[in-house]
Amino acid sequence: VAVVVHGGSETTFGYDRLVIATGARCKRPVSVPSAQSPGVFCLRTMEDGFAIEAHIRDKKPVSVLIVGGGYVGVEMADALARRGMSVTLCGRGVLGTIDPSLGEIVIEELGRHDVHVINASVTGVTGQSDDLGVSLSDGGIEKAEMVLFAAGVEPSTELSRGAGANFGESGAIAVSRGMETSVAGIYAAGDCAETWHRLLERSVYLPLGTSSHKQGRIAGENAAGGAAEYQGTLGTQVVKVFDLAVARTGLSDREASDEGYAPLTVEVSCPDCAGYYPGSHQMRFRLTADSRTGQLLGAQIVGDWRAQVAKRVDVLATAIHHRMRVQDLEHLDLSYTPPLGTPWDPVQVAAHSWMKA
Ligand SMILES: Cc1cc2nc3c(=O)[nH]c(=O)nc-3n(C[C@H](O)[C@H](O)[C@H](O)COP(=O)(O)OP(=O)(O)OC[C@H]3O[C@@H](n4cnc5c(N)ncnc54)[C@H](O)[C@@H]3O)c2cc1C
Image (cartoon, rainbow, N blue to C red; front, side, top):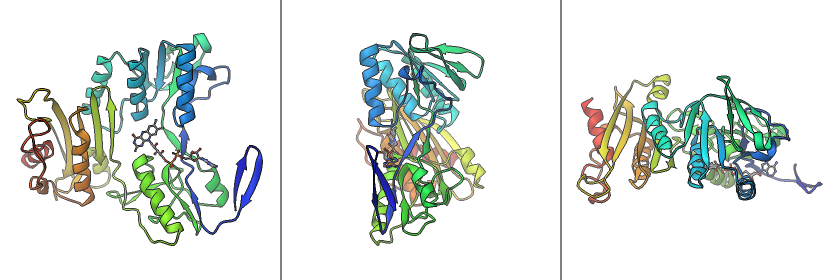
């Protein structure tokens, strides 16, 4: 039985099948007393976004400290710096989903736009209103007129707990590839549930809009009597940070090695379009494949945001999805025109480099 609460009154519905899609909520690594909360925000819902917007409009803070250097943290650093605020980004590294050599390019880009990056954990929020700040693991205190937590998410699972469903190690709802929980007839999808990883062949917690949409469709179809199966995620993602686009798919070298592969990774720079064409930029690639078989395992790309980084990572995600080998990439008939690419696409340049290595 599902119980829905509308402004205090409870309505009870029976159901034949139930789909739980309760999403996730922001992680707050430290508690925030209510006296401090007026200047302290999370960004998860539209309401969070409106509250941030109203605070900036009404209080006109000139400085913001963002806790967390993941994709929401760097996107907000970009957005708030563009509004003229002085931005400090505080976390254990920046974009930990990419390897440090590419992470350095992102840190440089943040610096180029006057975003101050601090490599430390936040241990508490200090002061309030005009005297707001955070305490850091290195003993320091950083002052800011606004604090934004972007320190990741945790699955919202209360409803499924009540229904008796099992959870994975990640704390998210455990589901089959048909998106059914351990309770027959109850399905779960999206950020509240675990995700089947196509390369690892096990469930992980990778809350992304891309996989949530697919899972939701499968849960819905199966709840209505279908037999659809989720084909798995590769954790493909792309984010824009000022003038850069940063993307990854599949496994990093270290992740591949931890999973028993024998990864070989090459890092290569190549132009994103014909070098003589105005506006050509260098694009930086890391390509990982198994050195015994050539099976593609992962890729990371940083390039100018106009440079079709997402197209390149999507070619590689498609290749990894279909278990292609590096040597197969050079035979792909990829498009070319001087303003948009090179006769050997950067994907193929990276593949050549891997073959030589
Ligand atoms: C700032 C930001 C940027 C993002 N950018 C990207 C991106 O570029 N690419 C990408 O792939 N992903 C991105 N994501 C992640 C993406 O938004 C999520 O993966 C996706 O929204 C998850 O969908 P969902 O339906 O599972 O959960 P949600 O969208 O969180 O929806 C869950 C809903 O369930 C409601 N709910 C919870 N509990 C109950 C209850 N007990 N009863 C009734 N309702 C309940 C919640 O209020 C909410 O409305 C971003 C997320 C954020 C916050």
